Amino acid sequence: HLNVLGAVLMAKNKVLVVDDNLDIRLFVKAALEAEGIEILLAENGVKALEIFKSNDLAAIILDLSIGQPDGFEVCRQIRKSSSVPIIMLTSHVEEMDEAMCLAAGADDYITKPVSARILVLRTATQLRHRARQSREASTVMNAGPLSLDSASRELQVDGIKVPLTRI
Image (cartoon, rainbow, N blue to C red; front, side, top):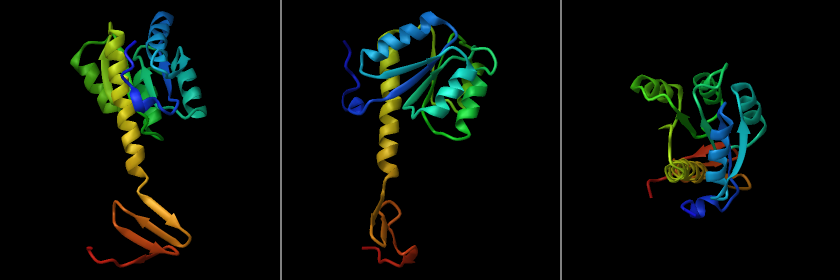
């Protein structure tokens, strides 16, 4: 049991696994469920996009060769509305395929075959990055008519910006 995800998994994370090969889907499911991650499965791009639209996902593990729409197109569609981490898990080993995946918006690229340990570690990295971004995104504090953004150091009262000194 790897148990490498620690505090990242305090909240239940849902990860969508998209692959046309049932054995791969079940392998990824078993590896990640052992770490406490809830897994949703899709065998093609149409099903993947349906699940994406109806769930709050922590990450997506996506194969390139899943029929039409293929993994590139699914990645592009998701990137139009979301920054959810996308890990491409594929048997394509050409540098051009990796470059195209990253250009389409993928966050990571893993070639098959992959060990369960590496898969879990790479997924944990993406979940950790997402958790950090969520914490950093919540820099605005509100109290009645006051709104303070600690990142930009901007104060607003009833939506009107109040000039502040540097200190």
